[in-house]
Length: 213
Image (cartoon, rainbow, N blue to C red; front, side, top):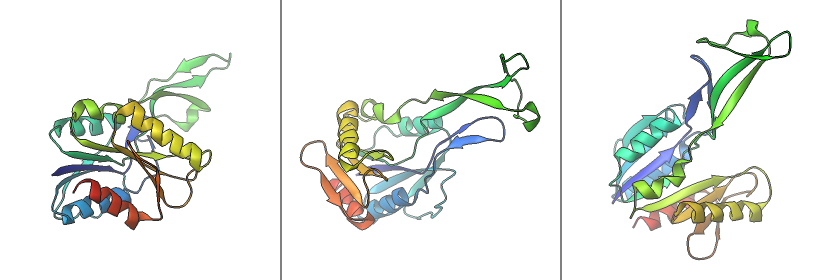
């Protein structure tokens, strides 16, 4: 089976030197890719260039991505894969126009390669990026698709509810739920069946590896 694992953060440029990005090490996705390779699968790991976990397992094809659109292009080129584990932390927003407030209170758009501190207080427009998980089923019509839902606000039940919504809205086969809202460990939500609590990363990797076997 050819498995794709996405891991680590995308980033979106603000100007020629600054970026918007997410806190994501890429460690879990890299560990999953290695586990799938150890089980005998052909594995492509798409990992963010800014991931702080930089282990490069020899048995895995590693491709680095930068922006959300770059990750989308790489996924679309791999459209014959059998399973996709989408653990990457994709930026929800990209930088739009930057503005400076003039003396009369009006906002003036800035047109320059680097935003400087001499411009004073700046306002930055944020534009939503496309939801890659919403496009996966069109790219991979018959593949196993697993998404991730990391949530900060709310409680465990609310986090699981958002994970279930992700499955329904994006036609995936399951969702891994984690983050402060969920609490310790991971929640596993299959498209059909009951939610399951997994106490740590080892249990999660066992569960996900079993899906590919």
